[in-house]
Length: 504
Ligand code: NAD
Image (cartoon, rainbow, N blue to C red; front, side):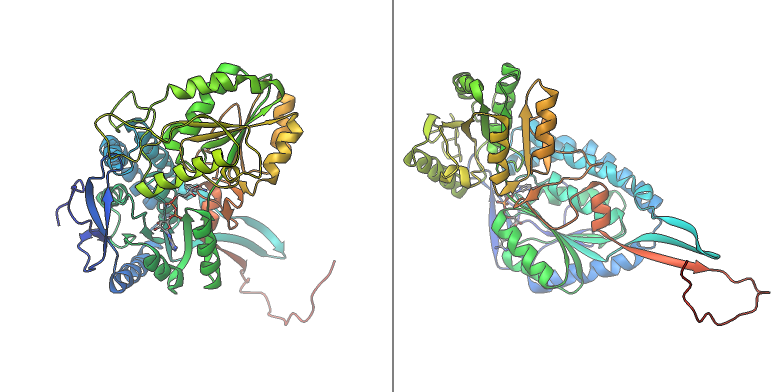
């Protein structure tokens, strides 16, 4: 099959052993441009035989790959990083077409993934274990980090470049093989990334891309050769993956939904607060797990809501290559219906809708899944719009009297992905960072996603597992520690039975 850009209208192949392979499945799912509903391609639901081949061939690739020295693995990662960079715009264009993201946003999606590949280039030093000399007379102990075997990844629609790249480069750099099941809503970007991976010179079978939905995920969850599973997606599916994967005795990390609050202190810079709130709430149409969806105004900072409303009203959605567009459409008509339902529910439950994007239209694109910027004030913690992740361009405003009230509100929320505080007081910021029960905290930074030398550390219902994505935690997740205790005998020394355990 032809290599190159995945062409619209073709049936999407699987990616097995570095080849594009047509699936034998008679089940497929259309992939659409969310601004037009044009069908870009159809994604097959891989058959059981195709799943078996992908996994078994990955296992065989692993047996060879685990012995490749980490510096050689790192060199291939460097070539992959170069290829991703030189195809950055092409990848972003594919990504924009299937997600509707603006071109600038799509480039950011690809770039954040490239940064993880750069981290994977550091694998020789990341894989260094521990040593201790002379732990007992003439005995040394040291540890190695060895790969697990075949690992799998199941990824969501909202970052089709970055999130697959959170997973497989680190897993493969650690010496594993990897089977990726990308979102069926935008699988073209990960397929193109897989082709570039093969182009970098990695051996066949190390990265397999299979398509489908629940049945294919279940195959991975239950397969004895799959040793570890990385998942990113919604809370109910994350809970299902974590429970099912661990009940099959696999290592699982499952990243889930979010409700991220930004605390606005009255001593904050008002212009910064407003521009950061607008960008972090409606950017990418609010379809980011680190989007700010709740602004918590402390004291008189609530007076700024009118200015916020005016700034939000100026942001317009549009087609991906429209440079004046602030964001694109929602991923699907179903996602749009769900968000409109939640907006209606918010009004019904008594929140004040200061800006309503329900009836949003974009010239020349009448069929797009558009929702305009939407702003609610007077929101209370019992309302459905507060309790549920909306995943749309909708910002809720709440009002509290003190920083401690804001902290209490956020700590009572079941999610714990990200949060931020805007203030000019170091003391307030420090108090917040210490007492807040959320895994990623921004101080005058609205979306505090850590760079890949740290890890992506969501808490509470936003994450199930122990070791997080990328950084040193990914190395621990994708490896097993082997600890060796060694003694070398002097050939001239007499061997005497050691009958006692010596206590000192
Ligand atoms: P989703 O849960 O619907 O789908 C994610 C993946 O799971 C897809 O590959 C899908 O095919 C598969 N899947 C869906 N239903 C399944 C089932 N019943 N059994 C097995 N597999 C199933 O999520 P989505 O709508 O694609 O993504 C949006 C969600 O992802 C949001 O909730 C968002 O907050 C979350 N997310 C979280 C993070 C994070 O780091 N915490 C990052 C990005 C997105």
